[in-house]
Image (cartoon, rainbow, N blue to C red):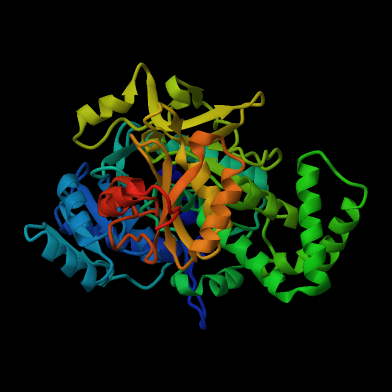
Length: 555
């Protein structure tokens, strides 16, 4: 039985049980039982057939998360059509470029505005259909009946997921049925370790777009288990939605966990008094315990905080939280320790779209802060030249869509060359240290991974939005910093940071840009990563001025 057959079997068995829910602040959530979801899938499958699509054709899905998104995705897969999910907030020109590359026979849009923007950016686009049209004929729910996907072989393509394109044109990553079979067996086993295998459904909250590999794997994992997945429908009301869902766990990117941690600490600092003092002392005690340098009174402060402060913080974050799951980028070790201090473990996941989202996953029973866990079963990992992480196993994609030359650049000698740098400890747990293509190479020959320095400075600068180091071919490092923040504060924090760094890693100049990098201005990828080449080109004049200066430390 493949992953899709398992999902359909589970939907049939969960006829009257809620499977998916949409959080609507101020009102009751919209829900779908197994029967409801099967009815929507059947309607979408009928629409796809009348559109002339057949097994092996491509169908694009451009819409925000919703129950109907999940139903349409399952319908596409069940017909043997290759799903091409795309980020609805992507610039129309970028969407059009990826759509042209994929060559879909049908483009399914969440609303008329998306449809019109695609039609304007790609006048020759094939059929464009709205969700309202696709689901117009959903019959009234009936008792669950057998619903069977078409026969699929492990080597059949299930989806084309487009990479973010941090330094060039986005590429379509082909994901096969076999890739998904293996990965979902790994994720469901790990969730069984976290939650057990009882009949009570997991409560899962989700806010990340399904078009991203890790997010899609979470959706399929929840459908493969006994779960209720509640979808965020308004990111401006995320805290309220999260409280309403009261999840056992949910998937995160580091940026949100950093914001939560900063918000908690800022609120306590503003409150002041004994509570703030106890928290600060408890935090310092926790960090000393982690460093294996405890002091006699440390357990007292941790005990007081554990009684007076930590329970109320946990309650606000979610009274049922068993864990937070984090991926997409390295999480600051200090932030992971912060949540562990509160009694909320953070399980890290590492992987790329090309590895079906996952290479490593933390074991909830054995977490090492700052590391992303061991390789998942049947996946081999090692380091190559320049500490590059190499991976092979049943999770590795077969290639980029219509790009054999670029496929050959990353798949050779029997390994997938990730482009990420890392190391592994004696227990097989991995740490991600940087990205090869992001290395800043000074004219002195020093190679510098910018991410650790950028992350440290960003954490120190309250009010800063982003930090990006520059300096390729130059004699020293400089930084572009976005946000509303004073030069004096930046100078103070850079001086503090520089005191801990060797001479070649010190930041000597900086430029402040009040407006942050965004997806809309073309300086962030769809999943929020810096488009370093685009930023360097946009700020070429400012970078040149930083290196022309000889006296002033800022600009």
